[in-house]
Length: 191
Length: 191
Image (cartoon, rainbow over all chains, first blue to last red; front, side, top):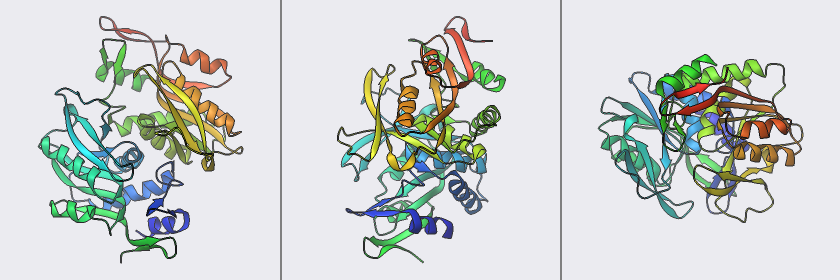
């Protein structure tokens, strides 16, 4: 999606350690007009699917998912990072490995809010190693819900997450796909 | 606001320890249509103010703030819970006491995203003891920005936060104000 690619080129910053900083419009300050355009594009891409719910993960997925959900006219559920290891039987749970922060944590979703009748679109800001997205797919499958697909803002296509998730049979629509980036050449997008 | 009060009466649950559970529509599953109506109402209430930015706090404020921001056509900034005590000089920081979780944490906002020119509306889901809201006000004031007011979904008016913030000279518009609640009588709203 040209609009997002241009925004990344103009406002994104590449930091040492292969970090793409997009906190001026995506995950600290949020350009809600831009995000609404992303939501409109996911709606177009998933037009023929009867999506009943959007699932995302706190914190930076929430804003994007909520704005996208207005285009789909469905509720959002966001998976929470669990603070406790003893969460009882009321939640679906799955593990996420964070390569950015070098730790592992559990995410949880109340069993009240995903059911076998649900056709779910998963929305997130980034897809890199795919651990968060895989956890959300696992939670949907544990609930017996159908994962219609994923809507990702920025995919780092040179990292393994996209292939891993597509190999699970999940449709993934990433609106900006980065083939490479470094401080000299900047961000290069897939064609 | 009748729509929100009705929703709380219908879908809210009162748990032991004076906890109002609204995770079916506000802070786990999110009813985006309802939230959009809240955004419209805040827009009406703050119609004559030239708001330049909406500030909120992760995680459960983000969705509400983003949907409200579409009505104001301004960006959202969300304060992040800091994981590290050494955050350098690039952030404004303030302390929040969580009575729910019995701990204290720092919230941070990048200095890039609030400036003295900003006229800020603070949005959050709950106002009870007011610690989170006070931290956001402190951050705005440290940045030299103007706090135009706060838009709160649910205020527990029998707790001290609302008075404390109003005594700081901040306009607070809470769309549902609870005067009392318990498991026998349910939720009672202020007139």
